[in-house]
Length: 241
Image 1 (cartoon, rainbow, N blue to C red):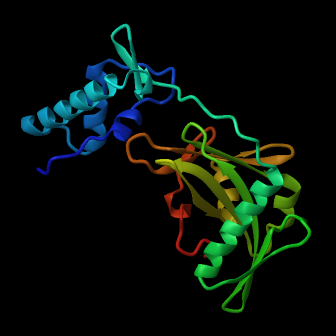
Image 2 (cartoon, one colour; image 1 turned 45 degrees about the vertical axis):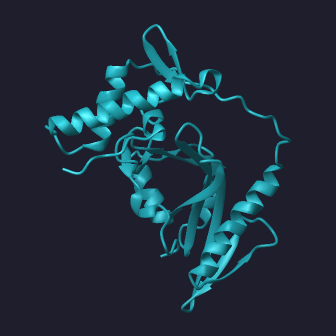
Image 3 (cartoon, rainbow, N blue to C red; image 1 turned 90 degrees about the vertical axis):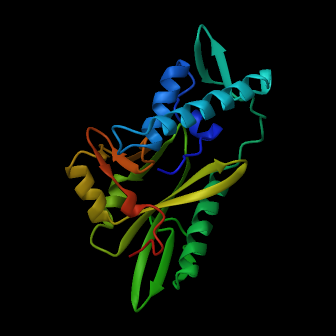
């Protein structure tokens, strides 16, 4: 069996939030479950190797003191809250426009002729390919605590159900100091089905889409009363098909 590499990022992913505290034994077991999800029994040498890497990484992290990723108290470890530098907030219109431009860029790379609408009437982008027009509404947000939230106006959703409408969520996240985008694209029919299956909430005024990532597999799931894997809708090469 091939040796698995443990990283500090993997250790940090064990903690669900800043209030989550774990003993070193619990961290080891969680890491082993993540690295070997389909193996009830693993080789003793493999287990020893993983546990040794966990201990070494945490020991090195401890030496960083106030700059460490983890804090230690009463025999348990937890994630350290990072000091944030307060920046001038970006106007929401800028954020929305940036998300639309990001989607247009992806569509152009996929061979679509795509343009932004000058007036916001529930459609942000019109895209054309192979003699078919698509209407796109973009929701730009950021990933917070491993979760994504977006809302669609219910009147607009009902208005555009019959046409070639697509809803694209642009989720902004930080990857080792670099801001990146991930995309989720849905047809109205897919959203309607998820509402029926109680994986998306339909309120009086809006449709609320919530996405979380599985702790072990990393797969995204739509969730409300129930949950549904939405990997198929995630970062598709052609987000409108």
